[in-house]
Image 1 (tube, rainbow, N blue to C red):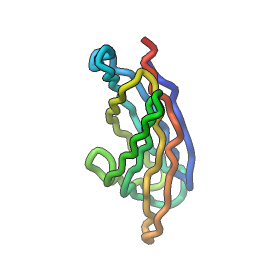
Image 2: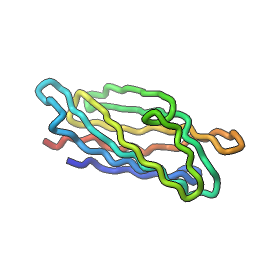
Image 3: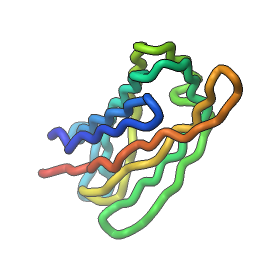
Image 4: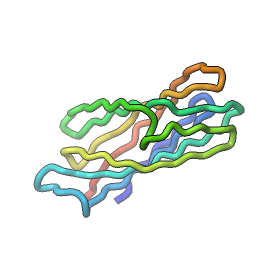
Length: 128
């Protein structure tokens, strides 16, 4: 089952999130629900940008919040020239059949100027 996507544009960087439930990798009777999500970053602005770090806020339907911080994404720090697109996929396990994810990417410009790019809230829904 596919969850609701999200899309948001910050300072010329568009972030699209596409979640999907993985029933074959989940064990509902043990409160283990696994979701995958694809993130696509598009540089719609006129300046180069590099992704340096991520911050995820994951909340399950019991209200349990987990903040995840880390360098780059999937072991990379992608550089986006104007017009460039970068995509990656990752996973998120939660203990309920519904939850949300949102957050931000910390990025820098070529001159070293930092800026934050918002990842709009998207929904993790098992819909069994």
